[in-house]
Image 1 (cartoon, one colour):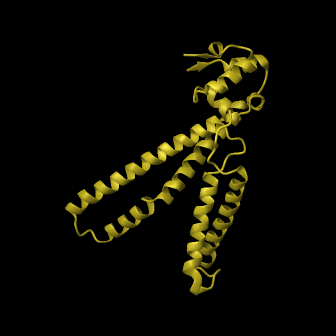
Image 2 (cartoon, one colour):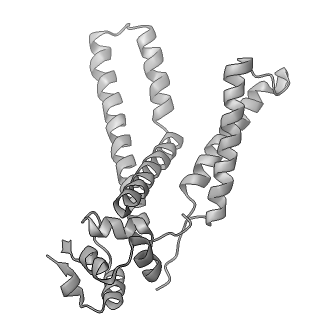
Length: 155
Length: 62
């Protein structure tokens, strides 16, 4: 029975990995060699960095939401589990941040730098892009783990 | 749910990859079923029973 799939064809995953590899090299060069953003003229650097981030998220999206070479019901089950885990982790984080802020701010209302870093972490992890990346990582770990275990089991 | 896929595979002397190719799934799926980490759908269970020439009840036990 043919089932409708909302995933992109497998070739998009290859494109996503290539894009991810290229972006990783650019980020690594920027951080390790130049330590500044010199690949793009200074006046465009902000836009260049933003473009790189967008491409990084785009490549993560392509890798996460493209079919495997052979997509079957077990892989679909792994995807469902990863989505569930992502949802649970995100709920836990949101509740934990809310509680921490409510309790800690009443005890130490002027914690200074702590709150600055706290809100940076909150902003970084409390959004849909982070959830997408988390799903992609969780799914990949599960997929590769089963691939490795099944290879070991076969020997 | 227990199953005797590994035993039946050994009787037929085929690898997980060969079984996976025969019924159109990945090797990971066969590994997960054999190790009780994944319960297959009715469709896949029927494919496995047809491949081994056994009934679903003979392959899978509660």
